[in-house]
Image (cartoon, rainbow, N blue to C red; front, side, top):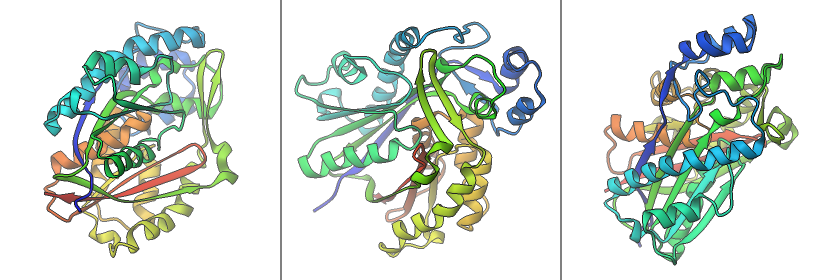
Length: 347
């Protein structure tokens, strides 16, 4: 029996600003010219970021959480519609074909939520099944993809997953915490969607592996406060990932007879340039293996759960994948958690 396959991807982003402009015209004053903050900014590997809240014209630092959530829903609806329709168009599907809509986000919530409102506005069936995956952070696209794949395999559903993150709504008041400096230098906004069909050509989801290092859970946090969501991002995170990435890849690849050098594409979440460097070194990847991850970080920044889909979309556009070629789809986040999926080109 032919298994399910990822058959379409789509994205949408708000207006952009250059990383240099954001520093010169806002964050330099925000951090009172702090040399550490400027150093982190310039080493981010980012040239362009996108945000629904442009700090040069729209300062959200004084907003409470309620106001930020209202802003989230206002901005998320058009971005979500655009990403899903781009995804369906690429897959050759109509909204009425969708049997399961999954929305992933850790940056905004409301009820009725995006899953209900987008299904309504896009003209999906009133019988469409829905799932919301919330507050898992940057790695959520991988277990989310596994969930929509399971629905396609077990119940024959055409399934769509939308990852939509608006981190620009959570800029915090200035302080001296390194974690906040890193977060403000890295995070950006994007919506990215994938469609999974019960059978047909595309990327087959072969297997999934997870690893959680709960002893180091405090190194990455995302707390709901009275003034939006606040990131905790320790500089020790690459060291923890370095200890686990080889074991995770061994578990994911070897049981399918695949070696690291056999993988044709590496869709790795670009949490930051040092993280990508550590993964490349530990796995002994060829130069250029993580080119799409670096390029996505450069052009979009870290867009939390949506980012790894942007990387995968770039791989599909730029690499000539053949039938049977494998792609690794990997991300990490709070927990401290690492998730990876093995995909295989079909058709």
